[in-house]
Length: 414
Image (cartoon, rainbow, N blue to C red; front, side, top):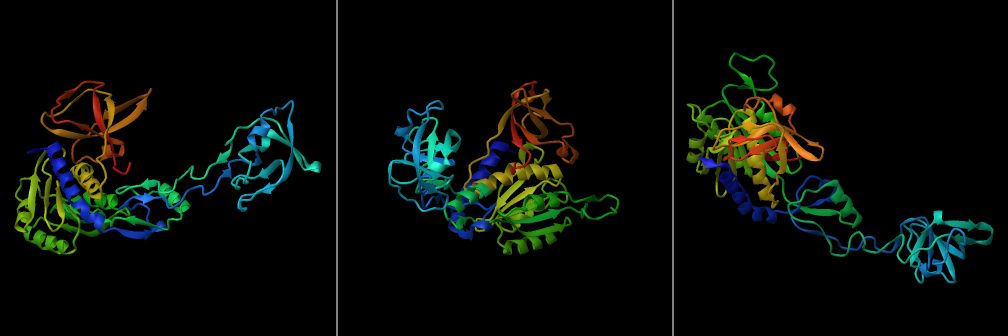
């Protein structure tokens, strides 16, 4: 069996090798269609924001040096030369005085180098004058040109997800389209002669409802994925090969199957893929759950992830193999785990990397994690309590209370 570390490295290596061709397939999409998609190139600012010096406060534009002796007890009196509001054209004012200014309005040209808050003044309406009751320094309460975005500043780069925050920044810069990668095309093949559809109300003896298919479909329900096929098959090698050929014609990037990768009479996927011309990279990983996991590819076609049929094995295969492959394919860096302290000691099988359903919380400034009961690969109920995975290295066998372990969010989306 291949170690988890080596198997994951092989998966990520293949993703990186295919990354360049995905960047060649970039396309420009309207800004409001880009949320959730993945950038294909750098986004840089085509202009400065703000594009002009403007006031951060309602108040008065002043020459800072003229206010240095102002105080509440001895305010300094100034003539009000005029008013400038947000949306007004920048202008100049003649005379020795101040200019009433509103938040966002352009700072008048000339000697005006600060803005004093209206709260620090007292207006004398009948004389068009104002009393300044405290000093200000040059630059006070002025938003300088380019203080948010400088011209040609990088906002985001390849592999980053387009978020509402990025869209907001792009809109402020007049970017009406964004260059993105095409969604990753994925096909699902759910196998198992014991499987019934999840919607079936009455199960025949010996049958179980498919849970892996709905999970994977839900995980793929994002703008950056395109689910091109979702088939459910009985355990029949000939039928499987026929359906696999149909799926290959759809030219997906990734094919995911569940079931039929172990060592039983009906576990035919490995041999079938090799007969279809796939190159097998590995079959079986020293991990739990999900040991029989398979990874293959066609050099001019998709990669294939064969996940074991137990539903938690499906989740672990998606979380710790397919998601890292997709990250590499997009040019994203590897996910980093969080360190946490074990609430209770734990004994694990030696020689296997284990992914355990767990619940973490911050306790008095320390990130602590509890491994939950019910670690069987068929047991879904602990996932409803879990908020993370604990990943235990293969060399470990017994971990003491307070041992430092690696923690990953339950979902990569977290």
